Each structure stands twice: as C-alpha cells, then as structure tokens.
Length: 99
Image 1 (cartoon, rainbow, N blue to C red):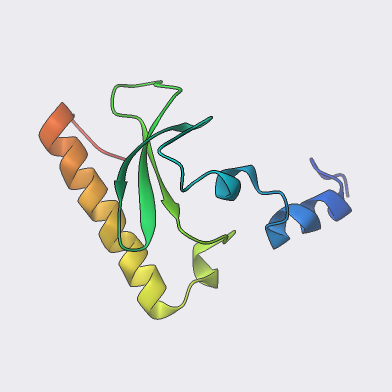
Image 2: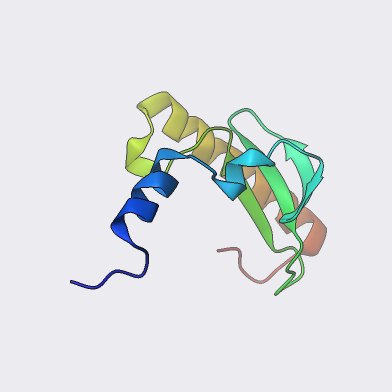
C-alpha cells in the first residue's frame, strides 16, 4: 500500500524527533507566525500565511500527533485554550464563523 511519507520517516516524525512545529513553538516569532499568547496548555499563534484575517494556530506545549494521545486533564485543558483563543478572535475580528 503506497504512503505519502516513507514509514521510517513517518515513525521519526511521530516520535517528535526533528518536529518543526515543536522546536520553535515557544519563540515569540518563528517561521509559522507570531505568538499572541502563552496559554495554560498551548501557544496561541497568529499564522504568517493569512489565508483569511485572523488565521491562527493553537499548538499544544508538548509533541502529540492525535488528540486521543492526551490524558483527560490535558485534553480538557487544551480545548479550554482553544475556546479562549476563539473567543479572542471573535472579539477582534468579528467573523461570521470560527472553525
């Protein structure tokens, strides 16, 4: 079965080794964008590639591939951070909808 990434490379990425999202996530500015807030479980970042005004990313403060890898407290805390970020975006940009 063909894969988009060779299995050994995918295993390395899943382990967090060399994860470009994790390595510089703590910085105020990185290749992905500008950090807006340091939240409880995550970083709230305004993305450089503004496809739409307010395009943001909420990144967990540790490497994880899937939400099911998080424990109950971490999962709940992450979603609270996402809700805080969405509330702030709603106040500032007043969008019709937030995804």
